Amino acid sequence: MIERRQVIVLESVRRFLRRSAHTHLVNLLAKVRPPDFGPIYEKLSERERVALFRLLATRDPELGAGFLVELPHESGPDLLRLLGPEAAAHLLEKCAEDDAADLLARLDEDESRQVLDGMRPEEKAGVEKLLIYADETAGRIMTPDVFSLHEETTIEKATAALRARESVEIAFYLYVVDDRKHLVGVISLRELLLNPADTKLKEIMNADLITVRTDADQEEVARIASKYDLLAIPVVDEQGRLAGAVSIDDVIDVLREEATEDILRMAGTSEEERIQPSIGKSVRTRAPWLAATFLGGLAAAVIIYRLSGILAGFVGLAAFFPIILGTSGSAGNQSATVIMRGLATGRIREGMYLSTLAREAGVGALLGLAYGVLLVLGSSLIVGFEGISTQGAGGVVRVAVVIGLSLALSIAFATVLGSVVPLVLQRLKLDPATSTSPLVTSAVDVMASLIFLGLASLALARFVP
Image (cartoon, rainbow, N blue to C red; front, side):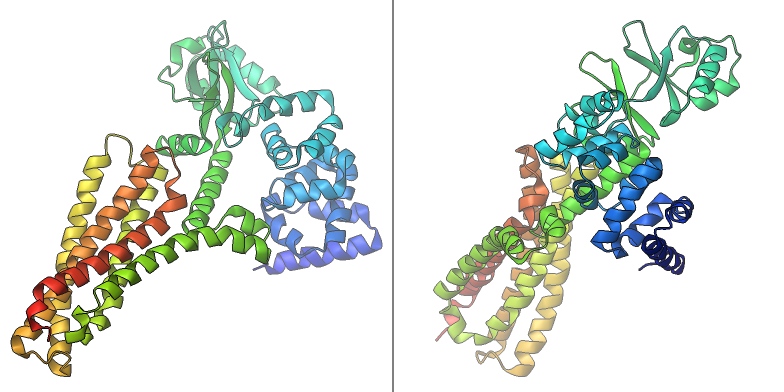
């Protein structure tokens, strides 16, 4: 929902665009916080968006760049295409190098090259250094412009050097390097203020470093930064030389992107469908995952059909299929969600798989016991009072026990399966979010049907006419 203040800004932007009041428009937007610009941008027409950013690219590219990186993920590349290579290059020169590299990486190769060729050599070189790293790695999202000094530097000289820098994007820490540019320590800016001016950096630096390599996955970078409460995490190359740092704002972006991606994958869809929501694209994206669930349901139907003879004497058993399949399916998905979240946040790591599985098995056993007993009591009342079974008291008790025990075993199985599937996929270096849900749902339906009808055929066979 767009706020009242943003509505006023939106109306003013449209009015200034119509009147070509460019100076007033730039002055107005200079008072808008970049994160607040997204809702305003979404309400503009395509013609207004292009006109606005063409104006900013020429009048105030720094302001335009600040707005550009705050727009929705899919909007940046589309806007660069609409502006054309020259104006796009002008805007990207004012972006942070990691933001510029991210935007260019989402363009086609030819489009990216045209924009790069329009940038000034210095900015172009910085962005190209980041583009050599693979997508979604620390090297791609890091900021190369970090403040580092030699370990022999004194605090007095370090403070003077920091003041002399016109701008430092990551100024939370001072990184300390040796003669070969290897990262050897880190100092918080607070330490510079609390120690004597003639103290050398190597004397007060923290040598117990937490670093990531340039090829580290961005999700791993976010987990490490979150675990150790870091405002920035240094990135080193294969020789241990300081290459840059990933700041907290980039960590937050990664966590948001990864969470969105996992949710979409668990639902059997993808980011592409969200960005380009055409009917054909949506059908092609969702169909394969629905097929897995469909085939599992079909297998369950075959089992039910083959064992349907047992239902001849106890037709009322069919009434309990929904609660057994639904409850066990929910238990499996609960367990799978807990495990996948643990893997994503790093709380569950290799070496913890067996203990995690044992814990979930215990949870499943207790839940199965509790709900199994409740269903025994509930089904006894239903079967007894409604007269579904015509085989006397013995038949009523047996039906109730079969139904309750089936639910208990199904919940226990579903919980264990919901734990095993994501752990196995993780072990095989596959993304658990992609396949866990359809696999668990299908397998639980099949096994719950087998358990229910199998127990019924064994326990109730002599009551069948």
